[in-house]
Length: 191
Image: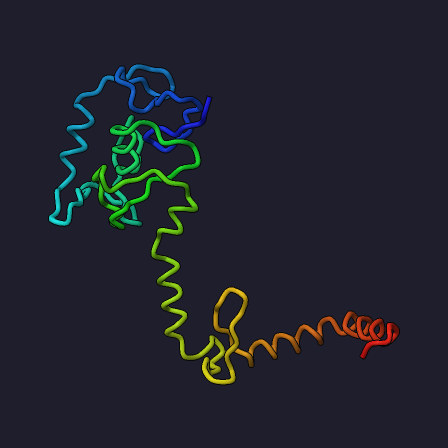
């Protein structure tokens, strides 16, 4: 038995999707009487755009994702439609918007991927790198060019003046430790 998440994003604990059961069974086991077909309610809150996206025009989260009411609970619209059309979302997986539009609910623009893959595909790291490249001075006001720049192991530019200052402060705080290391080197015949 594999873990899967239903349309609400909650773990159902089995391969069966509780959320999109034809019999409309509530997670607590009570039968639910639907006043209107949920797919009709869903499509009423969408608009087709010229770029191929089907945008959610109902309630949006602060991050721009559509919110849909399912079994008296708010759920992500893109997760709901994915589970309704393609089946339950496996545990540990997320739905990636291939179009990079968080309000899009077009099933052709959605793909089930791992969180790591979703993060790799995201734009955040590119934005952060562009911001870092545009910096001309460090946060303490030292210039980030010429002889005052070093590149760390992650490929980021670092201020040498700040690095020297941090090393000097570390030596002051750890003076006894530094002296002990120097004594051991001298005793071993080194400098």
